[in-house]
Amino acid sequence: MNFPSVIRNLPSAPRILIRGTNWLGDAVMTTPALLRLREKFPGAHIALLTPDKLNDLWLHHPAVNETLSFSTGENAFAVGKKVRAGKFDLTLVLPNSPRSALEVFLAGIPKRIGYARAWRNLFLTQTVVPRTDAVKMQKRSVAEIRRLISHNPDARPQTPHSSHQIHEYLHLAAALGANPEPLPPQLAVTPEEIEAAKKKFGLSEIMQPILGLNPGAEYGPAKRWPIERFIATARRIQQQKDCLWLMFGAKNDAPIAQRIEIGLGGMPTVMNLTGQTSLRELMALLKLCRVLLTNDSGPMHVAAALGTPVVVPFGSTSPELTGPGMPGDPRHRLLKSEAPCSPCFLRECPIDFRCMNGINVERVVEAVLSMV
Image 1: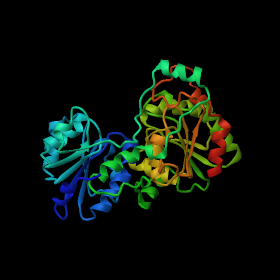
Image 2: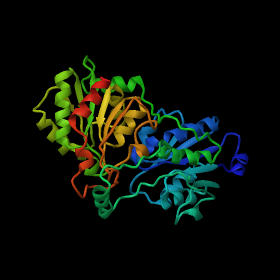
Image 3: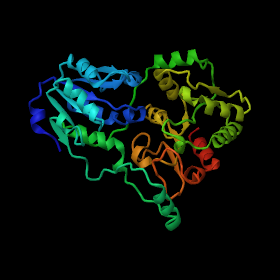
Image 4: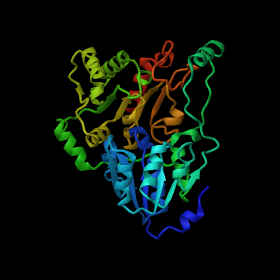
C-alpha cells in the first residue's frame, strides 16, 4: 500500500523528516525502515527528529543526513518551531502518540504521514491503516495469568516472525513506495571510535576474548533474569574460558552491578563500566564483545545491530515481537521457558516469576560458550 499522489508530487531531491521513536531499543528497530527509505529516495535529504538522549545513535548512519533533537522539557510548540526552519516537503511519523503528530503539524510540513490513531488523525494529511497481521503487546491481567497456568499449563501460543516490530515501521515506509521486505537493523561505529574507547578504558593490551554483561532492564524487574544467575553464569564461564567481562548499564543500574561485583568476589576479570560510558562509547565497546549476555533491553538491540551476537533470557516480553536483530537470526540465542503466561508485558510478576526462573544457568552457559 502506498500513496501515489504523495510520491508523484515530491521534488526530485525531497527534504524528508522522520519523526523518530523515543526509546533506544525502538529506535534501533526503525533502522530497516530508514534504510528502505534511503533506497527509495537515494537523492533525498533525510533528517531525523529525535530526543536528545538518542541523538548520537545516528552518527555515521547511512540512511540519515541530519538529526534534529529536542530535550525532555521542550513542548510541542517549541519542537514545531525548530522543525519549521528545515522547510521539509514530507514527514513520516513513526511513533503512535498524538504529540508526535502535533509536532509536525505545528511545523507546517505540507505532507504528514503516520498510523491512524485516536486524537491525532487531524494532524496528519494521510493516515496509514495498521497491518492486518499486526500483534498488539497487551498486558495480561492477573486473572488471565492465573487462568493460563491452572487450565493450560503446557500451552504456549506461537507468534510468527512477521509480527515483529520492525514490520510495523517497514509498513509505514511502504506507504511512500519503499520496499517492505525486512533488513537487519543496522548501526555504525568507526574504527577510530573503537580505538579511542579501548584506550580510555585500558583495553588496548587485552588479549583475552571480551564478553559483555548487561544485567539491567529499564522497563521493570519482570524483564530481568535473576542477579544470582548472572553471577553463577559469569563464574562458570570464567572457569572454562579465560576471558574479560565488561559489565554495562545506566547509572540507575549501579545497585545491580554492585551486587554482581560482590557476588563474584572481586573477580579481576570483570570490569564494571555501569554509568561510565557515553552512548557512542557503549556502541564501540559492544562492537568489541564476542557476545553480550543481556536482558531484553536497549543495549541488546544496539549490540545486535552492530553485529555482536547476544544471549537473552526472555520472560515477560516476546522475542517474536521485539527480539534483537533480524527475526529468526541464528547468530543470537533467545531463551524462553515454557511458562504459559509468558509474555505478560507486565513490569512486575504477580505470581512466582516462573518465566525467568524456568531458564536455568546451564542453558545460558551453554549458549554463551557456543559463541566464544
